[in-house]
Image (cartoon, rainbow, N blue to C red):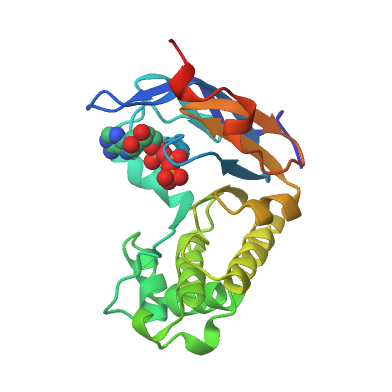
Length: 246
Ligand SMILES: Nc1ncnc2c1ncn2[C@@H]1O[C@H](COP(=O)(O)OP(=O)(O)OP(=O)(O)O)[C@@H](O)[C@H]1O
Ligand SMILES: [Mg+2]
């Protein structure tokens, strides 16, 4: 689904140079419509994680602007950042669950820190765990769950505040093929409920089967933006770095 007349994420002339001088992103222009599902692909170091970090303001861009749901976040006050992050769910390759809390408590904690009413917490947590098929294992600690199960709990936690956007940074990077497909099914379901989903991945097969919009990054540049695309290895479409500038 492409509804660029109703954008949820916009980036204009965005660049990011890290304090150590690494130029991670260069002149990125991007419009993501509400309810879209996108893959972000490209070699290691091409800038996928950096681009995601700008969306939830873990970093500020060096130049350019980022808008989320029509609001410019790049000039937002620090005090507003927690509110922004509540509208954006994030999951990572390494799950990042709290090891001493159960699945239920991990998800509940994300609600508690936002000051949610205590009375609402059990119902909301159970609903989120049911969505990811983890209700029966709600009482287990992360160490008692498989990788795929831990990632499902992490998705439930990311969704607990009904975010507009779900950012998934290599969500299947540590999982076997079956668990990876489970996670992709769940992300599709989340998308079908209206959440915009952006997935950074190296999983070529997944991208090819899903037939979603694919953004191809190469050394900080957005090389391709393909509707219903396939995985494009950036190296085949651009000369090798070693020959450039020689
Ligand atoms: N905090 C940081 N400080 C300095 N340089 C960084 C930082 N984070 C990333 N980089 C550099 O910025 C570039 C882009 O990195 P990024 O993590 O965005 O790539 P990526 O596409 O997510 O790679 P991968 O597929 O390995 O996850 C790389 O050259 C990386 O070394
Ligand atoms: Mg990355």
